[in-house]
Length: 406
Image (cartoon, rainbow, N blue to C red; front, side):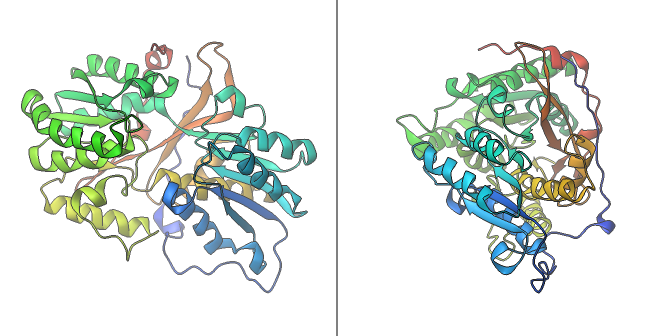
């Protein structure tokens, strides 16, 4: 499997507007020439995604105030309210000024909503971040789908662990997650990367938070097991888990007992760190440079400098804001919807000093490369140390040929 596109967009901080600055929204005295619909989860379901939409409103104004952005949220219980979700997304196209619809995350029903929009308004751009539906399904109706690069990161996370000094890599998951192509294939790539880089690979099973034990039971398991794992494998062991609920207790125990943590499944300074280290980020809400600095300070005070990592900016925040910015540039004619370089530049508008990289999705069964779905990832940031330039790595071709096996 060949990764055709390998581009990195390094954006200089001096040329960017930092998130959280006092930039005023669009001039509401003049109506925006066009509108962009942005659909996210709620604060309780996916806060970072929503904050990205709010950043777009800060920059370009809300439609109700004469601005550009129309933001709505899909239901928390989107699985049982799929038709409601579809109707909400489709309704955005009733606005005669609507030129693009961005959905992040692309929950089930997004593909059908896009199909209905395109049927009536083929000129409206339809972008989605982190689609939950099968690639071949979402690709039929979306102009662009963006997902976290599970393939490249299968190698880069292990490579980063070795840079930190890890001799063992422990992958924590459960059968449901390992049945997913993206997560299962990444696990296979990680195991091969460990073999090639001279690191012992270990797979440990933990309870699924959606099982009878629930989130509390799954987290308690991690709290009890981590000390045993560190004793068994040593403090020069890096740990990775595929589930968000496992992340906080894992970080908490690694801080106390030793070990490394490169980055979360969907990385963010907010993923696990505030709860694990007791960090109050109320004043810094939505300002990721400030959030990162505070998290870095507290983790370093707990002896975690050089041992814990993340992405400097939330993946969910960056995708909501970045896809909205990309849509705006495509509509204005300053970007092409088929250009990954233009996409990376739009994402970089919200992630000063951090690089983006990625490649187009290739279907494992057919070998066909998608033209409208791209896998993306950001540089790894090691707290107390700085960026590891993972986006500059040339991931060996062999890893893109590894097959998914359940």
